[in-house]
Image (cartoon, rainbow, N blue to C red; front, side, top):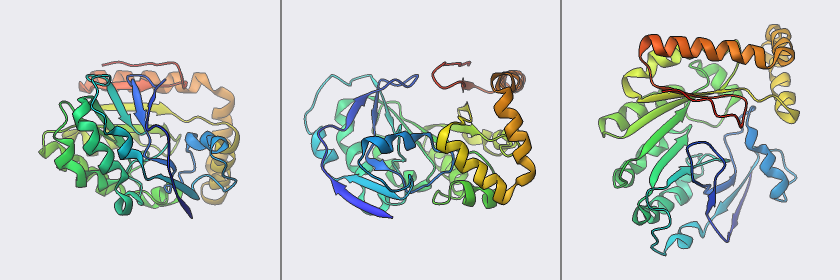
Length: 274
């Protein structure tokens, strides 16, 4: 793992994500090394030739860029993080995210954090100072033996669920991001069953199979679940029809169970329901 400390010129950038005005990424790169990570496209902007998941640039001056008090971000939706995990393991040492949050309070934004780490509960004291914070956890599977293989450096699933419970106890809004949806692996109904007592709403996103993402997933399937490979190839060919069917199943189930949800399928086409 290559760790490098860098200085950056800005830390808040405009966002093209749905429901988000600005994004903050405390790090470039990510130790989590998820095999399905779409953020690997960032590699071409970083000057790194290492594999995605094997390097992290630490933005050591990030909090100093937020000293100025401004109304520019008041009431705006600020999201941590779009192309990294703000609470990846290295955050425990460097505390860049915690420092950023401390400075963001005076901006009075609507704060949303999404992570795969229970480390976020360390910062409950700061998060509670925001007007309407919301914390989400990505969960792609409840099977921790699979989790160790597809997202090796993330928190165990049970720790994420316990963190959801802790946040709920502190009256902080929570959500679970079920995505990317891994066919034959992501048991989304059971994920809902195990977390619904602590969650305000759910988000769903389909698997984006392209380039190196498909190469990594295919390699993992060949080594661990070869019987699934045929089905994944078929799904690649079916494309939209497969995800349309799944989307309708999610809508019917959530409406029946009175579960709040948002669907983000097709990457760029915002499909959402409440």
